[in-house]
Length: 267
Image 1 (cartoon, rainbow, N blue to C red):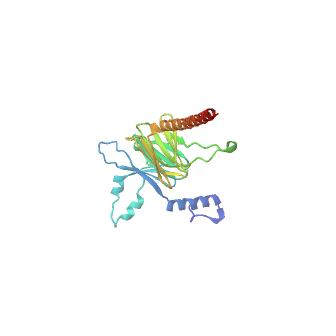
Image 2: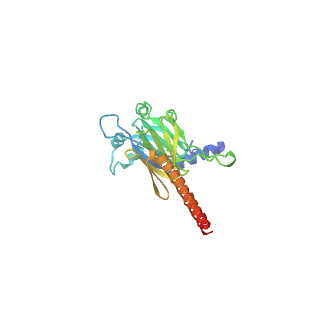
Image 3: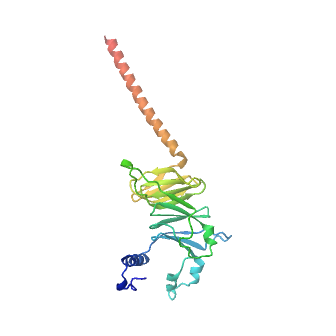
């Protein structure tokens, strides 16, 4: 029942509120990210594009089907009626990013702090164009919560962007708690936490050739060194500090001994 069809003799406050919110979301819906889907056929040109939007939906569109609707000024209104071939409510709240992992897994992240994976082949082979909530994700990762005083847990930080490193079996997530989380795809656990900013992260990029990860916040861009050398560099830093302290005490001891020697020689 829409807003215009409401009967004052049978007033439903919850229904009226939901209709208003739905109308506002429809008018103000925002697409945050799109990605070209891998093409299983020998043709290198992809025919599908996947979009994630502010209502948490993940939609797949066929480019060829959209082009059949026509283009140009005379038929420009046809673009407004393009329907997705597949649609699923992937997240509670806005969905911010979408990526493909090894051409078989569709990954999405959003404001609920989750990274969800969907079987892309199952989506292509689906006979039902509008899946709704029927399809379940094959992967569901949730950002960790930080423990505060008296055991209180912080809210789950949102995921603003994700990056894929299929060679090392990793997924990187830029989260709202100023941390970048590295997830192990096989075990489904966080294997590394990268820090370097005081504000939320909104972008992350993984370069598998140089084995580097770069992420940025609202202030500046931070390059991160080779992932495999992070612990090695930390160990070297600790050793340098220990050596510096040892050298200080050695020089201090030599100075004390020289003073004592001079006092003994003068006596």
